[in-house]
Length: 254
Image 1 (cartoon, helix red, strand yellow):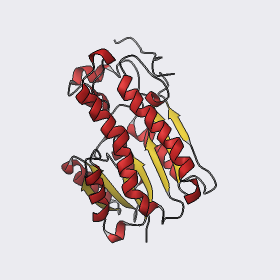
Image 2: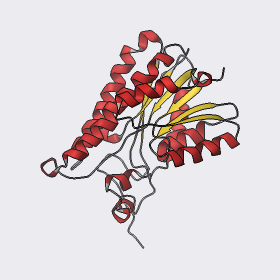
Image 3: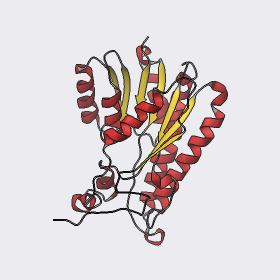
Image 4: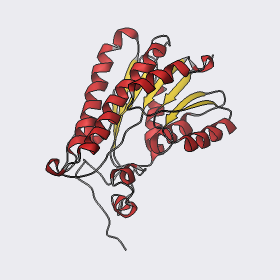
């Protein structure tokens, strides 16, 4: 039976790009997100190329929903070798003294607890798959902190710590654990962070060429196709105009 790749947060951005970059005739995908229409559009696109796709509307913040999802996976998709924990977000950009606790909960529940819940749900399948692999989507915010990033940075530091801990814990089971930690990537990330303020979101990338979702997807592909004896622990990616979370060179606008 063809191996299955699971991607959370697959309806747009990096998750969608991962599915597109990894697809091939006969490949099997389980794609989850909250936006069903976009999931179905992506599934149709992949199926035109010969892939087999099962979609599921999932809010990773609910442990019960994740557990129910696992019970619903069709038998033909249960040979799961790869889990890409991509679902995540930033909400707000303010000092800790001005923070919104609903934003804090949303980030922690999605970025940290959601990763735990989806991993818990899929681990029983991974344990049975030779060469199983978990890839967690990190961030440069998980390596450094920056002004007004507080809780988002904390959540991504947690992802970094969980990735390293999972690699140790799952080593005896033969399950590889990796992460990809991007800098500035132009997706819906900033639009979500600024709660639909398109002008403020686009300003984040003005004067430079940011990474594209496909750049991150190619890194994921490299990780999961590395030889059996190789584990890529982490890949940090920046656009050429960026050197850290704070150091960015922008060209003057014409």
